[in-house]
Length: 251
Image (cartoon, rainbow, N blue to C red; front, side, top):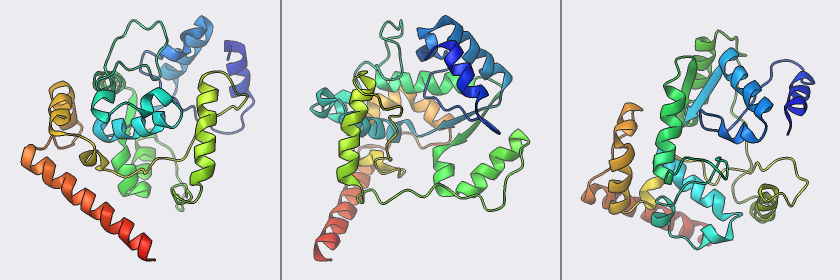
């Protein structure tokens, strides 16, 4: 999208305009057009910016499942290898940054949160108490909020599984420029918190902790579990999942 097209799109909207992006703080993906990059950077300075962060371990689990939906190469990659791979998500092909996925999460979060004008809210707070989190955010921004604010209701994850699989394949076409679809939005994989304990090995925990453990603590998350604790948590999560699956079969 060119600079003029983007400005026209914004100008055509009625009421408050929300611009969502996964871009890092340097807004690199907008660099395809110098004018567009300058315009978006000016918006980031002039307007209210809200940054939603999430436990990086849960985020990487979610990203892995998301990318497996449209990238056949990723489907065959073990999760332990996935988090150690060079990040190519939301960056330009010629980017000078060479981060693995954990390093990129750290770079992304720190880069946005170090900006004094940025307001932040955690995914976990939104998940735990949406109304309270949104109300607190609106107060910080000096905005009025309706009393009946509610989170968006999404269909059950299994309700549209076949349609989502078909659409996920189309997402890959969108990203490869082989589709006329205008959005790659899909329903979340699960959207729950703490899912990472089922996917991270003890070596993965140490790897993540060595890179971003301090940031986890600064954000209020618990640093990696020790060997016994992490194994116990994974076993509990797996037992719960098996129990739920057996219940579904019986019903």
